[in-house]
Image (tube, rainbow, N blue to C red):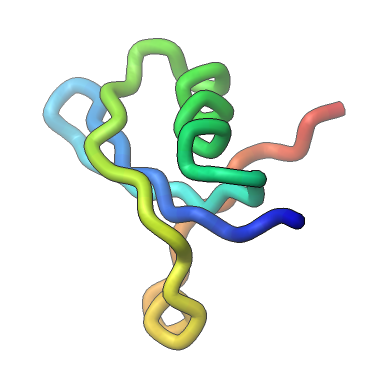
Length: 64
C-alpha cells in the first residue's frame, strides 16, 4: 500500500517541496535524497489532497 508524501528540501538557501509516492515517510525521504544528494531534507508529511490540489508541488522523476 503506497501513499503520497510531501518532502521539503533545501539546497543552497532555496527551499522546495516534492510529492513522492512511497510506502512510508522514511522511504519517501530516501527517494528524494537519492535523486538530489546535496539536498537537506527539512520535513516529510502525508500529502493533503485538498490543499495540495490548490497549491500543486513538483513530483519526483519516475525511475526507469
